[in-house]
Structure formats: C-alpha cells, structure tokens
Picture 1 (spheres, helix red, strand yellow):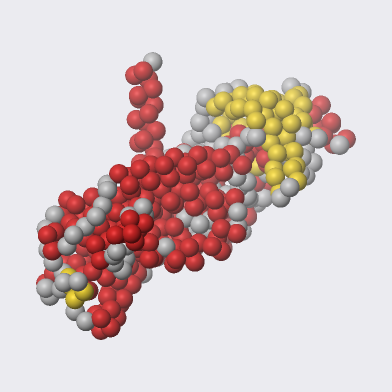
Picture 2 (cartoon, chains in turn cyan, brown):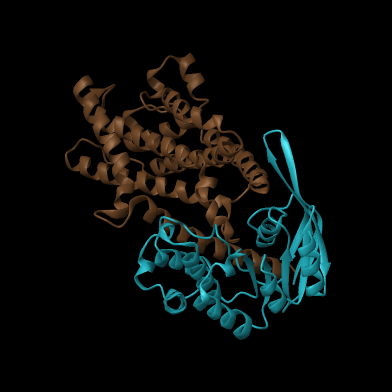
Length: 215
Length: 265
C-alpha cells in the first residue's frame, strides 16, 4: 500500500515561493491502477516524484509498504554518458538482480540491438522509454510509477507494454500520469484530478475524465 | 522488536554496500573510461604532482633540509594535500552531477560524496605506496620506522578531508558563490597544512598557532611515523579526531537539510 498523508510541496526560487501541492491525500491499494489527471504544470510529475522518493515533501508524510519502481519518465534514472548496457548493469547492481537475466530481458524487450552499446544520451525518447520499461519490468516491482512516457512509444512498443504490464502483471499496482483519456479510461480503476494544488479522488474514472476535460 | 530493528539495520547496510560498490564502478567508468590504463589514472595525478614538485625542490634546494631527504619530505607533504584539494573540489556540485541517480531510492546523497572521496583516497594511497616503493629502491625514501603511526596519521587526515566534503557538498548546493572561493581557499590553506615545514622548525609562537590546524597534527604524525627519531614531531591525536567529528556532524545535518529541499529534474 502507498499512503500519502497531507503532503505539501513548495519550491523556492530566490526569495519567491511557489506552492505546487497543497494538503494532498492519496491512497494506492495493491492492484489499484490510479490515474493522475491535470493540466500542464498542475503537479502530476511532482506528485509522482514525491511518491517515488526522488524529492521530499515540504510537509506531510508518505508510507510505502510495497516495492515501487522509480518514476518512469522522460528524465532521470539513467546516466547519459554511459551505454544502455552499463546502465542496465548499474541498475542490476543496486537492485540486487542477476545482470545476465536482466540483460537477456532488456535485449528481448527493447529490440534495440547494437544501440544498447551506445551512450543513453544519444537515445530518442522512445528508446529511453523502452529501456526504462525493460529494466523496471525485469526488476518486478509491486507498483509502477509512470509519468506520461507510455505514450511516446511506437505501436509495437505500446502493444508490448500492454501485454507485459496490463495483462501479465495484472495484479500489480500502477500510478499513471497521463493526458490520454483513452488510456486512462481503458486501464485505470481510480483517478485523481489535480487542480490548483489539490487532488480530488474519484472512484469513477469516466467522471474524473469528464471533470478533467472541463478544466 | 529489537531483533527486527537489528535485522533492518543490517539489511540497510547491505544495500548501502551494494550501492557504493555500483557507484564506484560507475564513477570510475565515467571518469576514466576503459581505454589504455583505465582506472589506474586515479593515481597518476597525485603521482605526477608529488613527483614533479619534489624534483623541482630537489634542484632548487639541494638534497636535504634540516637533515632529512628533500624528495621524501615533499612527497609526504604533497600526496595528502592533493587528497584534500581534489576531495574538496570533487564534492562541489556533487548533487547536481548525480541528480539522475536520485530516482533510485536506495541511492543516498551521502553515497555520492563518500564514493568520490573514496576514489580520491584510493588514488592517493596507491600513488603513495607506488612512489615510496620506487624511491626506497633508490635510497631516496626511508623505510617507515613506525608504519602504524604513518597509517594512523593518514587516516586521520583523510577523515578530516571527508568531513569537510560532507560540509562543502551541501553548501555548494545552497550558494553558488562558494564554488568560486573553493580553489583560492584550498590554495591559501597550503601553508597551514604542514606541507612545507615541520612544526619543530618554527618559532614556539608560530608552532602554537599552526598546531591548531588538524592537517598539521596529522601531517606531523605521518612524518614521525616515517622518520622516527630523526625528527621531532608535535601532535595531538584528539585535534584532528575532534575536528573531524564536529565537522561530520555539521556536514550530515547540512546534507539532510539540503536533501529535503533539493529539486531534481
């Protein structure tokens, strides 16, 4: 389970403060597929980063009783100057997994072939997404944090993700920040709409999507 | 309950050990690459620094100073000071340089600082052993009379450097001005590091002031360990130890504070 209790987050730039999240409560049960909806800059990515422990909340606390992936998004998680293989090896080491198995899975899932021998900074965002997903799927987390990135892949990648994430790992949880209402409607069972720093919980996903569309 | 805490504590250490191992390898890759001598580069820089300066001094000032070999004297001074200067300058902006790794929760900010310091430490120790072994063959470096004291002094020196890194890293995050002052500060520090002189060569008043410096105390220990009865050394183990502990506590508190407000891209 993940329980966010009354979290606030503000950023300081020079003398000015910007409050991004205000008293947000959020609960994710095992097996939940939670969508985060909100306009650009509403705080979806910030919330995902806080849940993933990349940044710390200004106040409030977060309890995590299941294993969480790192936020899978456009930035972060990789060292750009190292190759795909080196990054895989690093991640295998820090998550205590067998590199050989991981390497086999990554090669199979990404279908990137020789590209894996190139520095990650030369990858397109689609290739990064492939690598990030491959690594996090190989680690087998209880809950996946996905920040937009699922939509950057091509058809083939989306099919693979759908199979690996939504069919094979049906029992896992997921937090998905997305602007694609179709994806949210199709795969999520609960939703939070983030607006003006506050998160409103909805058990009815289509209602949440309607509210979001009206924003 | 207590057993459970102990188990979790052990598990935490095991994870940190793994993370530090992985970070070390990654840092060595990104800094030195896999070509030619690879990670052996870590000892080249201190080696060149100490070796060349010692050679210059040898030609400028003759073979001996106050009855001890000048080459060995300069090397015993320069290897630790390179550890200090590199260690501190490597910890500037270390959080930004590694921010993409903060996506992995088990990687802590202290790991970054520690790993960079550890690489400098290993490099300077390898350089020390390497250059001393060669010079011993040519009779330019004495065989240490008290290796324990030498190693102890080096460890105290290193501990103080590490504690400074713990302070410099978060401060560099809080203020960009600091970055500009680091090179000049580490340079100005040189006379207070015990590099050029033994405390016994100074006037009693000067000596008293200089012995406030943890670096000087540790340096005197190292040199006493090498030359033994040939020299008089003044040191107090508690000075570097106490200073390091105080600096570590301040540094850890600063790191914790900065981590809470750190914005990661």
